[in-house]
Amino acid sequence: MSTFQLPELPYAYDALEPHFDSETMKIHHQRHHQAYVDNLNKALEGSDAEGKSLKEILPEISKYSPAARNNGGGHYNHLLFWSILSPTPKTEPTGKLAEAIKLTFGSMDALKEEIKRVGLGQFGSGWSWLFVKYNGSLGITGTANQDNPLMDTQLVSRGFPILGVDVWEHAYYLKYQNKRADYLDAFWSVLNWEVVEENYEAALAEIK
Image: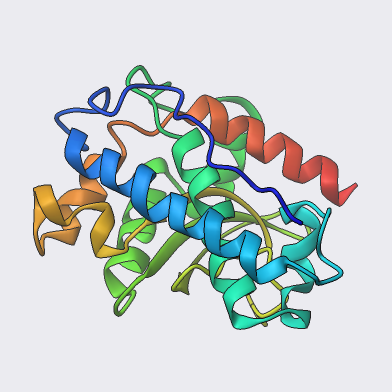
């Protein structure tokens, strides 16, 4: 049987206050993410995906059930999301990633505006992503539900996610209610660019 597990967060539930509130973080992690893990293990039981990693499963997710797609994406997306947040973040990218952002989007402000535009434009639940395309360039895309650019169900915007913003209402509603824009603005205060840079380097290594 597949044995994906819910990891501990690398910070306390209240560590991202006042930007992300403690109660939302606790519910988001302990209930929502835990449910994705439990349901993913059930969905993969008896399939040829048992024993495979998420990075092996998601690029061929169309072979598996809708439950595997939804919960596999949910688990992967949240692992990435938690990892890029920090109470003491590196607030700006440097090096190769900073250069790639300037080349692709013109400026950091332009990148932030596009992430926000995509996040606000996502009808219902979903994500806004910064990802590395298979040609090594950067792109921004939105996905519905728990899909992500790794999945072969993404016919256009495929590649390696390096930054993802959860725009499901459960990620922000207790604090921000229907003000998704305020939540998206607050995200940048807790985003750790050091981890995003590491994700960028890892993605480039995958392409080579």
